[in-house]
Amino acid sequence: MVIRIAQLHDLEQCVAIDAPNFNIFDREKRRKHFLDMIPRKMMLVLEMDSRIVAYATFDSDWFGCTFLKLVVTDQAFRRRGLASKLIQHIELNHCPSGKLFSSTEADNEPSIKMHKQCGFEDSGWLDNLPQPHREIFYFKPTQ
Image 1 (cartoon, rainbow, N blue to C red):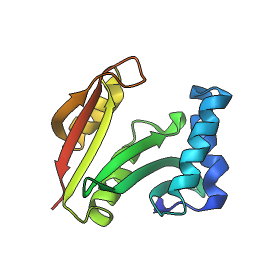
Image 2: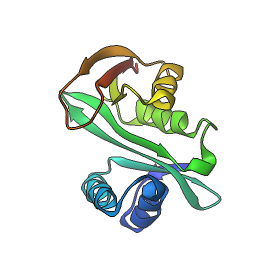
Image 3: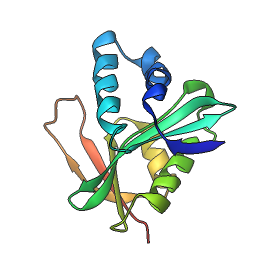
Image 4: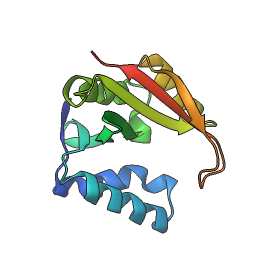
């Protein structure tokens, strides 16, 4: 297993991980997100046998803290701790403030469980976003 900063040549493999869950419009939005994150070195990929099976994007200047934007694992590789490995890598290498924040929709039980298992604590919620459910925010000290 290798965790590294994403490169432009990783783009299509990462888009393909999400492809079963999105229509073409959503895939294009995801592709644009990657094209923003990759040059800023704020996207990690996790490879197994030279295949990208998970990725994470983050922002290291969210109110002076690091915010985990996305953590996605290929469906065939879920529940193996790969998302946790990506989060741990971000904690150790990309959290200069010592504070890591994240969020997920209130109906995303697998993500809520993963956040709890990684040691995140509830930090609040936000309603009225352009999505059907409340967004729950999480916090984790990293130092």
